[in-house]
Image 1: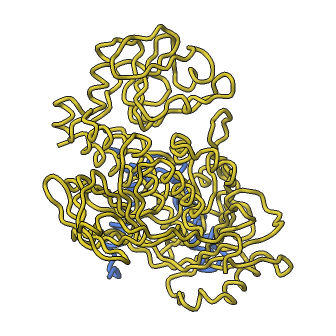
Image 2 (image 1 turned 45 degrees about the vertical axis):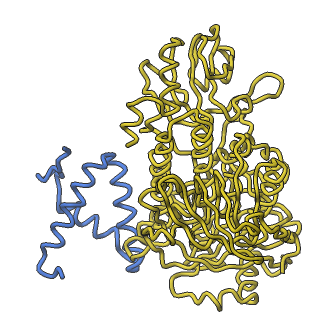
Image 3 (image 1 turned 180 degrees about the horizontal axis):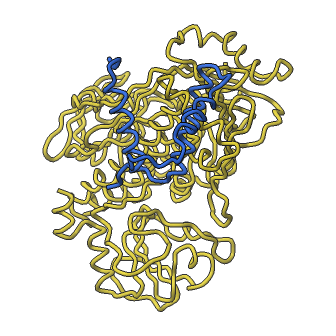
Length: 531
Length: 71
């Protein structure tokens, strides 16, 4: 059916272990989806080699995750793919919510100029995966093994034993570290027998990729509650590249998934929405339900769960793919530091300390949105409809309209790696918050100057001397200084994942050195708190 | 903790009762339910106090669940 994209087929290359029966690796990643590929590429950018196993030989079928958030785009910019995403993707920042045939609420996700990345870029998951594969191959540090299916997992104190099946036979791998990026139906999680429980939502949804040439619809997110063309249910519309549109139809709990996938039935729904005169072609259709759940812990000794293998959310809010990429961003610099001997192994416990609250935030928002979108009682529906009716004239009700709270980066407020503020601040990113972008002279952006290593961002004053951290000086006036609440002497310690570790009004080298030690997990206090 | 004022605060309670009932005239059951929801949302926002709203929700549930018809 697809006409705009042909899935590449990656060839199976018999791994060397087939000859010997077994081999060793420092890092093995399972699952070459967006999260696994991002993890492998980020490790490579830190100079760490990995073996990446995938049981298939291609990228995703259908567009799947399509909304890449500002923070995710900033991560991909650090990894060298930001411009490609901007060039190919559809940039948007405005969302509109309709109730029946009337606009109920409109939002602008990035009203402020002067950021390298927009609020969102829509891009089919297969493009991103294809580029990630190419970047991994080009790095020379990722051993990408297609058609390599993980069979067995044996956790050990100092590593993980793996059994892998290929079309040319089986082999064993002894990995020092295993990163399970193998999605919602994770083999690793299943082999370890870890419970993965949470809320099940009964409503079924139909998802369709539709090519509509010359469709006169702006690049914005549109959501309808109870529209005339699909009464009693909701509909979500997103624009993608290649004149492709993503439409999600809520079907209710009683829908028959097989019957709903029938192309004629899908076409009828789309015709009702677009009008009979608009020609379109159906590219991909799927019917899905979803759950909101997570593992109790994401680190299990030498095994880490990253992305959907660790947590699942509803699609409303674009928190699945973005949350997974941000897991990888959080884990990789820590693992690289431990592998390089720059940080103690206990630093890795902060992955749980930071990403479990992030997952809970994503689950909370996506659960609330789903409850609003799919009311489960007459009372819930009455309140939902009342909010939508009030929204037109009452700003307080607009704030309650929940058609998905769109992904924003988690602030690691309770992080053991952060040093609490000791001085007065009236703005700027607090410890645990992601760095805030700002334009610099000559078309540069602040985030582009941070890179993937710790940086001491010093405003105005002459820089202090602290070993083990690169210094970036910026003027104490201008947009960057305003966004970072900076005065002359204001100093921020920024982590390799571009979150703030500590900040000071006056740069005291001893205090900065202590904050840096804490950031690397090298204080006894950090070890105690992480334990 | 915020406390709900259970004493009479309205000068003409009979008139308020009648107004609330009249607000539902000519409405279908569904519209009526929505009207109550809209009214609660408007009043909750006017109250501007989530803790006090919690007290009101508890008091309302307690009254309804204590009624003889409650399952």
